[in-house]
Every structure is written in structure tokens, then in C-alpha cells.
Length: 85
Image (cartoon, rainbow, N blue to C red):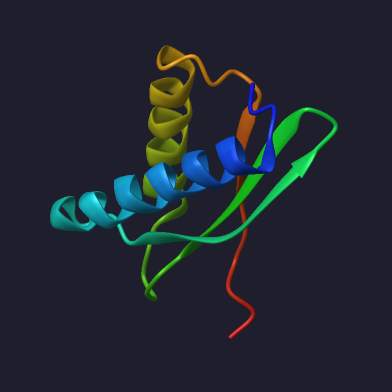
């Protein structure tokens, strides 16, 4: 559980890097925002380019959440969103 804003920022940075790394596998997602609220960290994730399929998007986000939990970050939720563009 991210207890401080600093810990939340570090987790958001890790997720950003994980999504950058995923681009090598053709998964184009990026973090739009992170918000710490009521002991939960909500990280808003959007496609970084057109043509991302919803199934790839959801599957990859679930994988990242499982990795976060395995590292002891239980109160983190990746929230899917669409670009307003």
C-alpha cells in the first residue's frame, strides 16, 4: 500500500517504465495520471497510439497489476481510459 505521496510517485514511475518497455512487444500504453486517495493509488492508463485493441490493453494492465501485487503494492489499481483526442 502506498502510504506516502513519495511512494505513490515511485510506483507511478515504475508503471510508466513498464509501459515504455512493453512498446517493444507492440503494446502501446502510457500513464496519463496517478492519484492517491483513501489509501489507494489509481493510475490512469491510455493508449499511446491509435489501433490498440481493448483485449491487449486489459490483459497487459492486469499483468502489470499482478506484478505490482507480487512486489507488495496491493492497493494499486490501473484504470483504463481513452484519449480525448
